[in-house]
Length: 404
Ligand code: PMP
Image (cartoon, rainbow, N blue to C red; front, side, top):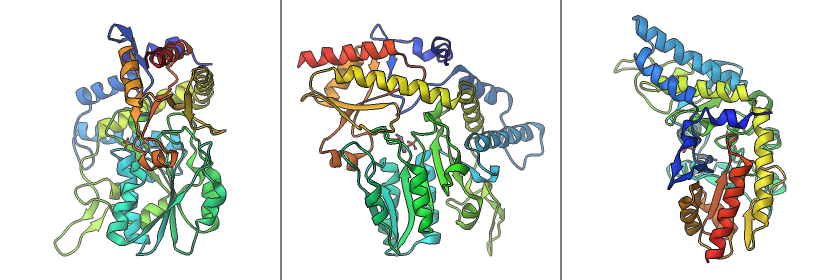
């Protein structure tokens, strides 16, 4: 059992007042708030261990290098990866997907080859492939969904062809909350000898992820969505795959030797980390992962599910309520519209009550098209949210409804 009141004390921002009302932060899908230990880690990193890492002979440089490499091991054990060589630090999910889209396409795909994605992808798992489509002539195949917002697994099976080279799907939808059956998806892809990339941006903050158990070739997530800092994220890749792929960016750190005649590349994981990495961000991300581990990912999942059920019931009691995403396996995300009220108006008016929700297409325009809408209001919960906050939120939604 989580002690929510004591957890809330770790997040100073939750004590803020917005327009004189207590802040109710329900925009956790966009980014999460940071516990004090993460912010303090950043501060103490810059005050005490700041020096450029790797290759430094001096004390501080070695201390900073050790901290960065220790952070890599923390991520490795958080994801249960086999080796820390399989953990590449990136700027976030977006950069990690772009890295794979670029390097994988260069190495493994030619014109006419296909990548399978799903209709519920975030733009960051669509556009990088479209850029490759324009450059290399590869094609996208799209898994459709049913009316509950679950992927159509039968159709998925039928999308495979001789030209399928990769499956790239989200673990959890940032709009519908659907928790996709990624294990089954990976198994099916492997039956066709096709590797899989999983976008874990909305999964890692909410449920325990074990990359060996999933057996995905690539798994990516963003630090800022799991209570860590912005500007740092992770690409997990099976070592044999990362070894096989060419570097994404060139520069310092990623080389073994450079001459004008021939340059050789560094070994993993450095081959994919060109330039000075965010060595303070990596240690702060590790601090965030230790924090959620202390709470326990399973405890987090159970509590957030309780919040989701409670909020779903409350919202469903409101006249004209339409909730998008009714999957059997669903994370703590509620996308909705009420009557003809524009999502933007709802968001603006809730804001005046101190309630932070997101409105719009949530970087998933193709999904909006599939749903036949322009956007939704999205409330996304974290373990620091409470049922009392949900009561205030539901009363706020009802109040807005009555205004129209
Ligand atoms: N994928 C999903 C499912 C997301 O929700 C997000 C962030 N909204 C991203 C990718 C992109 O993450 P980032 O902006 O941190 O790179």
